[in-house]
Length: 100
Image 1 (spheres, rainbow, N blue to C red):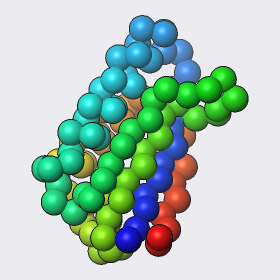
Image 2 (cartoon, rainbow, N blue to C red; image 1 turned 60 degrees about the vertical axis):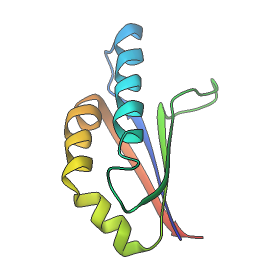
Image 3 (cartoon, helix red, strand yellow; image 1 turned 30 degrees about the horizontal axis):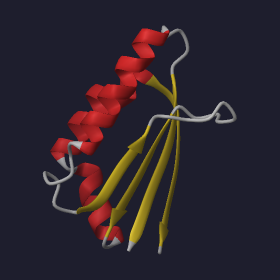
């Protein structure tokens, strides 16, 4: 099994209302890929955080193999969500992939 963990920080200058909408869109967009992208075993987006956090949103996803992760990365459905819901609103991305 392969875990794919991403942490993002939202861009500066977003109002609290905009942040709420952006986080909702990221969560719904990415979690909506379950059942659509067949390589996904499990996927969860965390948007609620403690004050000690320095990231705004986390993706925790699971795939059977590294090859499945690579297929997910280029799947049209994933690319669409990334280009429309994530990338326009985030300033940093940290990723860690590992076998479990």
